[in-house]
Image 1 (tube, rainbow, N blue to C red):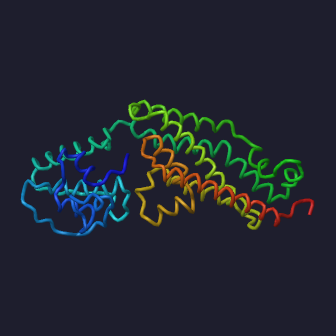
Image 2: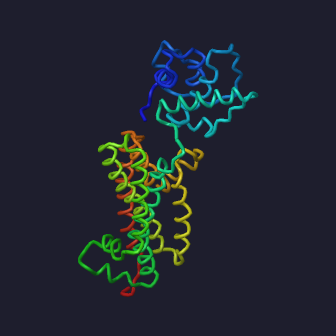
Image 3: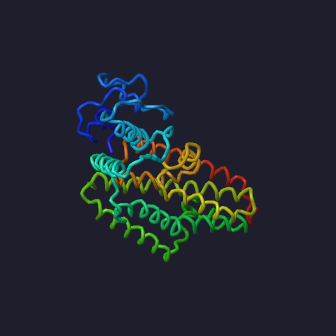
Amino acid sequence: MSRLPFDFFFQKATGNPTPYGYQCRLACGDQADPYQPETLRNGTGCQSQLINIPTGLGKTAAVVLAWIWNRVQLQNPRWPRRLVYCLHMRSLVEQTDAEVKEWLTAHGMLWDGKPANRAGKVGVHILMGGVIQTLIQPNMELLMQDVQQGTLDYALTKPEDAQILVSVRQVRIWQIVEVISGLVLLIVGLTGVKSSIGAVDALAFAFTLGIGGVLVYCFWLILTIGAFWVVRMEHVLELFEGIYQTGRWPVGVYPGWLRYSVTFLVPVAFAVTVPAEALTSRLHWPTLVLSVAFAAALFAFTRWFWRFGLRHYSGASA
């Protein structure tokens, strides 16, 4: 989804050439002017206000499209995640429902209720979970056990990079069922939205999925390295599982503090939401660049933290 200025966004939805001034001010702030395009590029905060406008001048479009533009397209956290529209006549309800569906359809935002159109999001979550349970989690559990029992020496004394060795020693082949399940859901989802999925989207999805795997691996290893100082680390499994479930939903549904937490402190949002956005053509280049930079920075920190932890390890040979 491209980030259209509000006047273009409004025109594409309604077919009207130019929104009224009050419609622009509701979406973009008091300084907005329909004849000054530069004032229609940024959103504003959602405020409680009375709109006293005669019938037929687009009050419904003003409220609904201002909310959609700010909350959905701009991901503006200052607007609520839900819009409740109250009307006193059934005929008005049906009319408003038809208009809103038309506006959403014009921007490709309307979900028609088919499970295939949401299977992509679920599929990414299950696919990444399968990769974790197949490759990442078993090796982290084994590393934690080796540190506790002092048997990590077997890996450290081999003439290879110790971090690589402890990361690929064990594969739970039966967990590939989760990976296959995720792929099946992704295929079903792609079948349902095949008209909007291109080669660039597929490549971006594969690339961001790999970036997501790196982020999850780094986070797991950082937690596991804590075993060099803390004896009992079994609770980390339950902790990560609970946090990972937050990736089942788009990161935009969470309040600001939690959204930043699951994006930067615990990179579940990058690992799951970004690939899902790439799959549905909603990934912006700045987000992709930020994902790559964040993955590189986190990997570098994880590498340093691993070596720092090793200096505090006392094994059987100590």
